[in-house]
Length: 81
Image 1: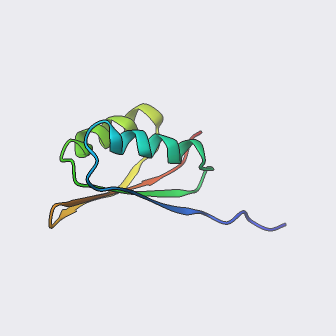
Image 2: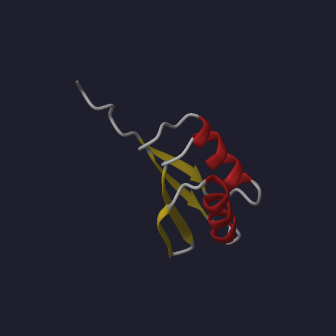
Image 3: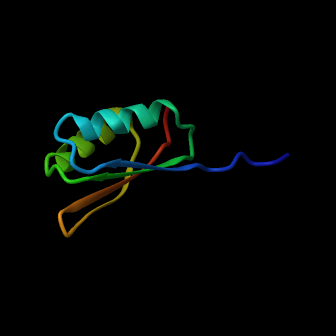
């Protein structure tokens, strides 16, 4: 029996302001499966607290959250649907 492939989805929301990045993340989440990874790129500093709240609400952990040169990268593993 084969294991389904994990999908890594990149969501580029740079230049979008609140609630754009979290809306984009939610849309990617709707298309995801358990085990998938979503990587969100954003420039809106509000995405940091929004992503943490989204993670807490959905039960899907943030694997990393980093900011470099004005770009915020949030990586989330989908553990719950």
